[in-house]
Amino acid sequence: GKQVGIEVGGAYSLDDCWKLVDTYEKTRIHCMMLENCCYDRNEMMVMRMVREGIFGRIVHCEGGYQHDLREEISMGAENRHYRLRNYQNRCCENYPTHELGPIMTYLDINRGNRLMSLNSMATKSRGLKKYVNDKFGPDHPFADAEFRLGDIVTTTIRCANGETIVLTHDTSSPRPYSRGGRVQGTCGLWMEDLHALHIEGRTKGEVWEPMENYWEEFEHPLWKKTKATEYTGGHGGMDWLVCRAFVESVKTGTNTPI
Image 1: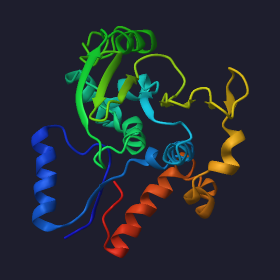
Image 2: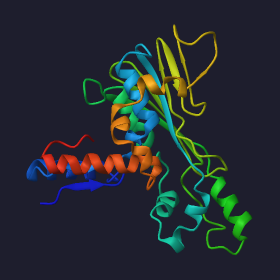
Image 3: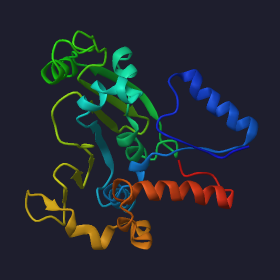
Image 4: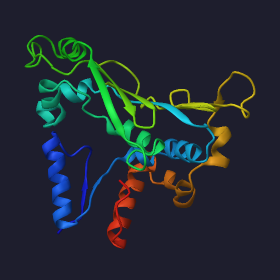
């Protein structure tokens, strides 16, 4: 009888996914995946621009979970961190929702569009083993371990309406954090790593414009209304917004937004 909010992604198999669906259909108790990046300030502004046609017809999106987790994974046994067993036993795109969640809103997935097919490839696994040996030495329990997860996993997805998506999982290499967002349409594109846009008819010349040029016109009303940037308890305010959305749906008895 409890309304459920779950961490990403909540299932490890297709059977697990169907158990969630079957339980909802039996109990009508909602289950919301708390994908906080759907509520990030940048992503919500880009979503508004997509909805208003600023990029024209969207043809391609990219995103990634690109985050140096080498210390977190190598200390997984001491910290009882669930990712360690995943990296030891599964070679896959094991954390796609931070980038795929916002992309699915841009492309109206399950709202008139569908993910149809995918191809996923992984590099060899070298980064974690090198990190363990370099930092902890040859006597560490994982010095000779074989991690199944490739250092970089690239997944290409094709949608029913003809768009393509590229996802990148990169957590075993030295690098700054990035979700690698890219939204490209017939009238322009957004690149997260550059924190910039190029819009035909607005941008003068073949140059990038800083996102700040568009905040006043296109910032999402939810961020303006709630002043979520003041809630610094988690990821700049987006954690507060996703939890707020879950609580509001429970209070009002309406479907959860995710």
